[in-house]
Amino acid sequence: MRSWIEKLEQENNEHQREILRLKSLNRRAAEEIRDLDDILIDCVENNKVPKYDEKDPMFAGFSSINLLNRLDAKTSGGYIENYPDLCLKLKELDGWYVAEHPDFYKNEHTPNCEWHKDWHACDCGVFDK
Image (tube, rainbow, N blue to C red; front, side, top):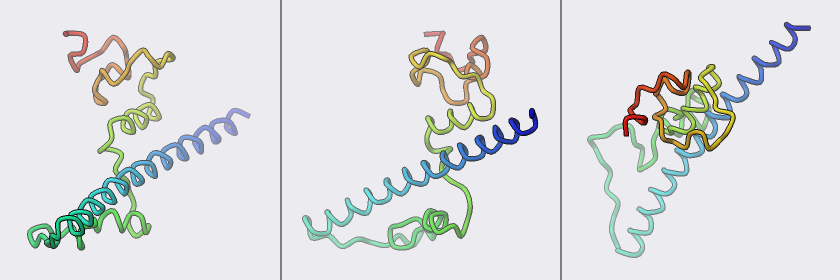
């Protein structure tokens, strides 16, 4: 019975990780769409021609090749590290301390602060203020 529960918990953990990865891809795609939209608006309203940056080969046109490959499932990964709230949720899945009351911490501690694992071990300086 116990191994069955552990297996379900592990599957749930894997699904939660995939959800975080997909959320990070959605956010990154939204950022790029906003950037492209700003470029198009600038082209139309201000009659400007977009310029291709030869120095940065990671961009095809103005979209990130890396993002496009991840969205097409040609490469794996996500952008969780770019979003502190998603990093914190990932750390919680890894066993970091989770406060039961949501107001107990409101983005005061950095995602890397040891406080999330043990609330006696703050090393980001929040309590020094």
